[in-house]
Image 1 (cartoon, helix red, strand yellow):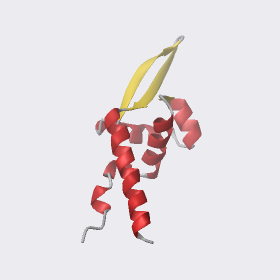
Image 2 (cartoon, helix red, strand yellow):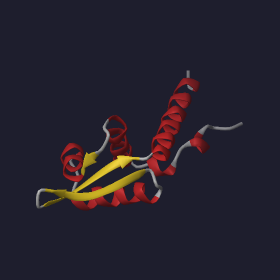
Image 3 (cartoon, one colour):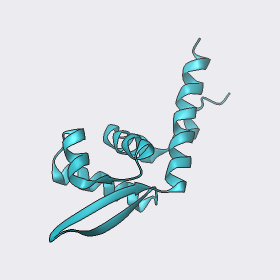
Image 4 (spheres, one colour):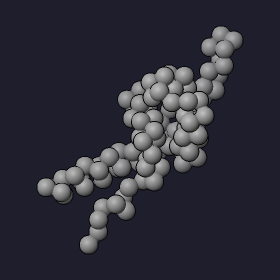
Length: 99
């Protein structure tokens, strides 16, 4: 008998990665400092989890400038959105099967 756990995506096992993807699913993009303030995390912690999502090709990084100030924005990829939806669907199915 399958447990359903095999459909979970390891990239989303971390709470912060779930939060990052949740923000990026409902916004076209999000700037690094906005994510940091919204999620109440340190620069290093946020950067490491963004890097992990980037490595999976679930997010894109856009580096640029706002005037003279460097600005880094993140955007969920089509692959990332699909993977996140599948992960959430698996969670929902698991919950439904418990009743």
